[in-house]
Length: 151
Ligand code: HEC
Image (cartoon, rainbow, N blue to C red; front, side, top):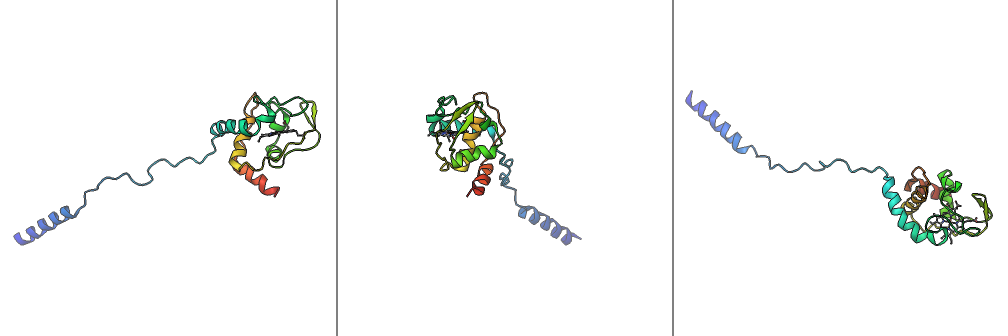
């Protein structure tokens, strides 16, 4: 029947007219997920400036220290040692006799606990990966864990 055909045609036209043309915006959040993984090379890079500002006055530019007064941080067991102890040295300082690479030191090192978790991790990653040192990453959450433990 003609009227039925017309109605169907109208419905089709209305349907077409009502179908919104997709404006084609970029779907939200289409970027690949931002990586939260700890980036060791970036941390080492940041750590260099922090080391120069916070540690170099005693441990010297190339980590060689000042023989008999300030121990080196280049190629020392303390820097290579398990990270919890190393983090403690920064958070609590270090006092009393300490033998570093066969030389005895007995000058107190003041605590550097004012450095936040990220800065502490950056500095330690820098000294653990400079001047021939090679150490696994110490993350800000490693530092936080240690800070909470000694509170
Ligand atoms: C005021 C001088 C001074 C500053 C600043 C200082 N230290 Fe020390 N540090 C010392 C002394 C002195 C010792 C040895 C302490 C002792 O005799 O018991 C030491 C010991 C250490 C040790 C353990 C022994 C070794 O040499 O391996 C590490 C690691 C270390 N410092 C890292 C750092 C880092 C990292 C910073 C910067 C955040 C820093 N220190 C800032 C004076 C300093």
